[in-house]
Image (cartoon, rainbow, N blue to C red; front, side):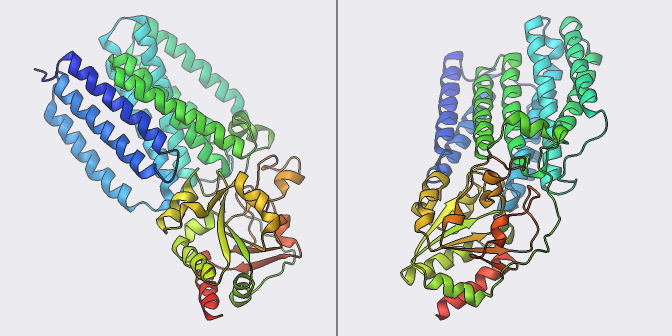
Length: 457
């Protein structure tokens, strides 16, 4: 017997939905992201408790056992995951959500003969399966368990077309007949479609695909709300689908590319490939002590952090360096590209972890006009987001992507592990500019030595 009546259930669902909306609003800024995350978690708790108190549930012990097992696995993983692996964790969340929605739809197939409900079931199964399989591939690419290069085979577009047509046909048969056999076939085709959709995507584009699959999962959850007659699932799924779609567009715009070009560019040779070719052209390299002198006697320094900083876990060291330079009267700010790191906000969170003031973080539109008045642009672990090829080389994978205009600074200092290109797989001509100095080595180790030299000035 349910404890809550329909009125109270609707009220608590409304409270949960408002929490989800406020959570999205909070997550739009690093300053309010922690509070937004807490509000979203509170909304999810209200929703789950409301279901337990309002629905006539069967097999409650099994449900509680599943929650306990899920929590026992998820909590340690979430607490131990490194910032550099956060995109993989997000991709796993996407995949699990989509897979769960698809399985729920399969179980609900025999409970209704309404063709409109079956249509929602088919949509949930197909989109959920695509999201699950596609997310698994993104995790593999980001974790380098599979190649970050686009993976193609002869006739792949034809196979993709055949899979899509087969899925449409199987879905139609499920709607008409309600057959469990055709439902299984639809699930299998959805999984294959997810694999074929993501395998041709290059490594640098994978974060955008994660965002797109997040939108897919949201739509699958929204459709499962129709299947189950649950308004909150419909609202929550729609919010996730809408926010994921917007984020995908924002990320694609930040890279100066279209979503279709990102997803299918490999078929015409336009997707990023993650090259490992190193240049043997001469560059001007330096020592930590010389870099420290450059920084210590500058008036204004702009630091451009990238994925290499995150991999080296050098955020605390670079924050100390900024403090040491500020103590010498040097103005220090951080220029953040929208796709620095592996996801939007990745660098913001990383630097916030090191207690870098939000006021010191400048987004691309705010940072670019200030480079002409900057003495030194210090680039730590970034490459593609400052590569002039985005403006000067038509046909380059990053052509058209807005970049940080570091070349307009008086001097440019690159901290790089090697001369390997970035994920785009192309050389950065700025590395060979006469006013550019390179300091090779692990970002954290190099920053530590530069910091020690600055303190010794």
